[in-house]
Image 1 (cartoon, helix red, strand yellow):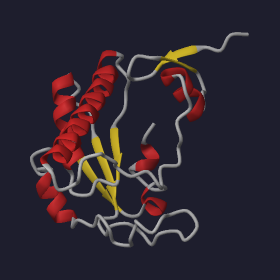
Image 2: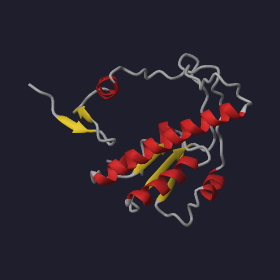
Image 3: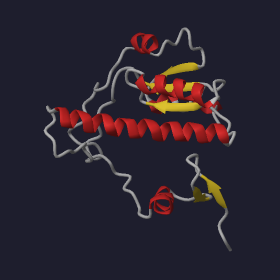
Length: 176
């Protein structure tokens, strides 16, 4: 029996109920690792050069274009639901998601940002590398609210708490 096909939000066919590894193999022709704990941005250019800076911005532009394509796919396929970001730091991507949804014509979508606003929790001794530090990426909620212009953008909702607490309560439990 043939597995049912569905389209990913980027428009590529993916088997229904495919695992991450299966979906990656179908989309990219090879399995992609899920363990990115030891992955680091690498370039042949020294980090203090304009060449490194150009590489960084080129990769950021590709990431931006990819996320816009996903948002456009959500709009064109009329996929319902809120957009959610986990770990929002200072809110840069929340701003981008807001702008992307405006461009895609889905300006009625709620955008939720889940964050502790205290930075990372204590790293797990077995599963986290020494790179991660407790409190890393902390940004005060009031500052993030100002950064994302939350007062003038009521569809942006910032949800405070560590994931172990915030994802088992409203509004997370009400998401589809």
